[in-house]
Length: 283
Image (cartoon, rainbow, N blue to C red; front, side):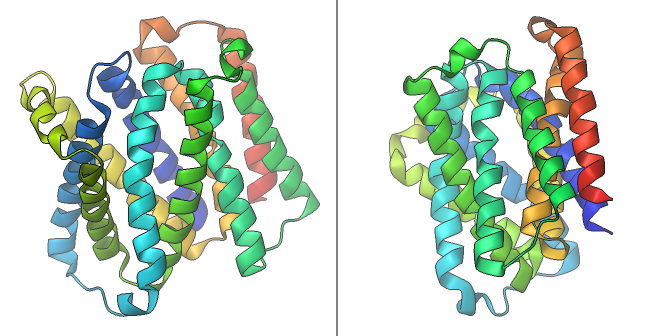
């Protein structure tokens, strides 16, 4: 598969999973640490099914143990802050804050791997980020505060985590690394609050567990596709292109969640601008 198609699959899988996450953890519906641990463990289990058929191998992982450890620790902490942030700010405002992680990935790719961006691709990237700004329901939600601070920290943690995670995935068996990294991240999240195990019980109920399983499947597909996209494509191009998921997430939420059906014209305009940005990047 091409990096463009893999990125599209990643965008679709992760966008659907984000809508499901909004339903699960928005407005303090779940303990952030318990959710982070349980969710990451489920994703690891889903990926492990594919690893069984593909074969498990972590050959050469010893040559990349430091970035591997960094990715696991950063993801473990990042998922907790991610959940806390989504509980404190509106989903649309959170999308803008979280999008800052793409900047970190893109910049690191340029600095460390000397990747190049053409002027047209830079314009395309700027259009994508501009379209993200349009989906914010109320810019007052981006005023300095605890929620905004957590959102920016989430972007930083995930930006660094995705970069190191993808770097390791380029050099070892992708599926095996994906499964191991999610198990490790779940363990790291649990270290922050071992008592969170007691808070997992609500997630095992008949009303929540099916949604968690469905969420994990889509997130696993999106994450593995993202890992392969970064493996065959460049960080500086895949990273901004993945942000089209924010527009897709907003439109999906508009269709599925009644409370998100606001500012239709602005959201459609954002989608149009985002589409132009995508075309400029991939041509």
